[in-house]
Image (cartoon, rainbow, N blue to C red; front, side, top):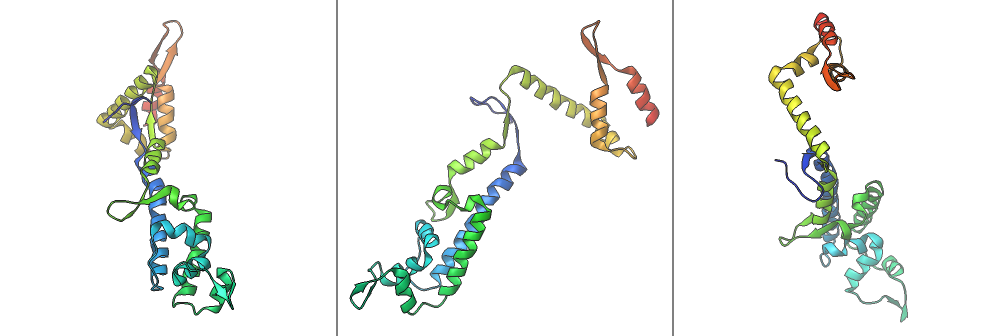
Length: 219
């Protein structure tokens, strides 16, 4: 159904492109969940979604904070950085696996821009599920919409729809596709380009009878 808004009537929605673009974001969610699950296997305080960027930024310091429950690191009464403290402490089981998962996610995000800005692209909904933010979904939808603003564009669209209907009703589309030793796309372009001629004297388009005769001989 054709709908309208300020950008003009929607004449086509690129469903496959929309699905492909959105899936790039939803696949990021799989990676985020895997990362969070790997951290939770350390049996420390569970990680929240909004803490994932901090984990990615400095996983060693993040694990220390969870182990020390936010207390600063000291050695012999002197403050030390969290990375140095983790060298001394006994690491929880699964610590090295977590560092590997963080490394994997960073590599993945370097190759997939959708995964880089987690806070900007994703959120937790009221059901506690990680989802793509609505503004991202809306942006993808907008990119996949084809709209026409001018009256001319709308008339061309109506003509194209009618042409497709006629081709299907007459099964001429199948005739063009199934012709031996011919490329369907090339054949159709030739048909569209030559079936009508512009008559300068009459100032109108007329049927190219010679083309139709030649076409008939070729079949």
